[in-house]
Length: 160
Image 1 (tube, one colour):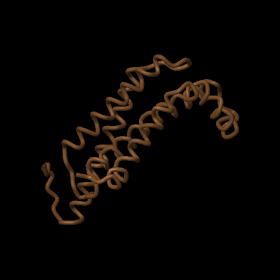
Image 2: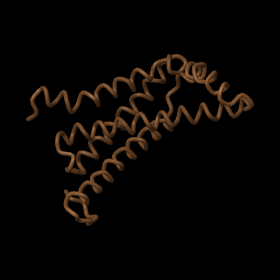
Image 3: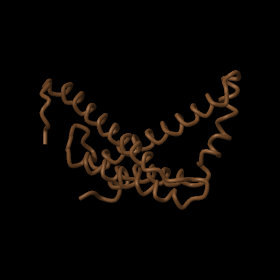
Image 4: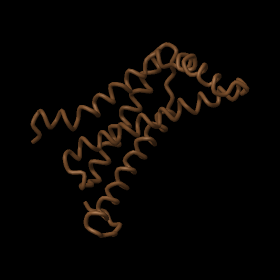
């Protein structure tokens, strides 16, 4: 059983990040608002590009942000499950982290259907879940690298 300090240490980052994701679900992070912040930067860096190029860049930045938010969330959730031992890999923890990522992604997009200037998108949820899956995949690859480095084995069977 984790004491309060350990619980805070391992779970607070994931909870704080989930809170940031929920805050980004507000009208203040709509496409119109982010565009008005990013467009001057884009125009100063690339003054000769067209409006169509800007719209494509803005779309890609927004979608990459979806992916990255949930990549980080998945890593933080897995860290919470794993606790203090980075040498451990557990498939159930990975599935649990990915299930929480999926629940938050679907809930977040559902919430956006009720926010003015926003619209919920199932496709964005899939992108979010894919970002989470990539985060879990990177955690697994890091585990494999650490394991090979620590004990010299290179077997690719699942340890749990």
